[in-house]
Length: 336
Image (cartoon, rainbow, N blue to C red; front, side, top):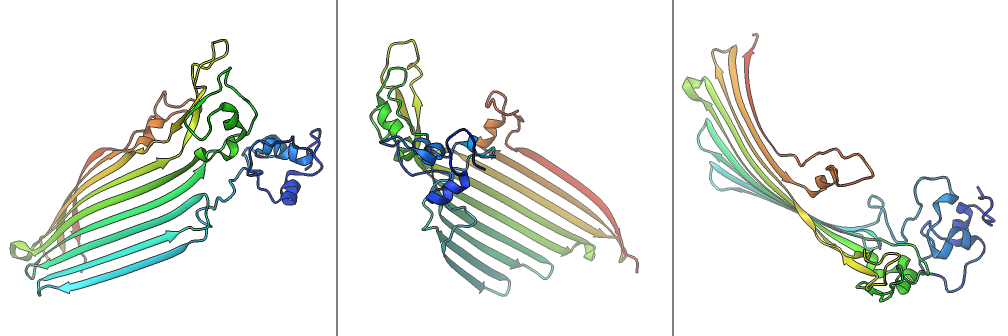
């Protein structure tokens, strides 16, 4: 559809096809000479396509060089190794490790790389014909590096209520910053996310107690996970004292560097015990106990509290932390 009353000669789709542009528009700052024709309509001041000119509630402003995570091409290296060792007739050890390395070399923005390692050591003990135990340890680590850009709109505004100096960032004055807001390298950002999980477990099985009538089972598990997210980049904020009707102050705006996000943690402890007593060949009774404790810290829930945001209704959800005990008793009968 060709929008009426704005001087356009083609539709948004036609303009993008003719110029080879995306909705992001030209990768350029404020034009030295005023744009004319369809360029002035669809890429005003070299900015993104104005949302009012097409029937969508979202900006079609995908950054040039952004590759969608599930479609970006990658080079992947993968390594696997397994070791089995029968230490004695009663003791067996097994270890395995897997390493992956994904490189998204053609993605300017989006996922840049992903690396992961998972290693497990498992030990089994045949203490007697009826008594067996096992223990294991697992370590997992995932790393992911992403890149993006928090661009703004080019303009030729030279001051913020009379103030002109910018503190920090890539430009010294408000005019220089505004002329290059869309291509300001200081608005590029990156993240380096790391997940680490340590898991310990042990269990036992004891059969034939009390003249062969009682079987016991037990499992113990502890898992600790941490997520760290290191950030680079930043954004600009106007000086709150640079307001209309007041004397000009310097700086007019400040560049605020990005900060690393708080560590997200999760600790899980789990204990399971069970016993089954056989009255005879047909009937038995089973009793089990299950205890689980979870402790987490996650900054994402801070934004769900009252007073944290104004555009949506907060839910007051908090990071899950709980203690749970479960007791079960069952009677088992087998028809012959």
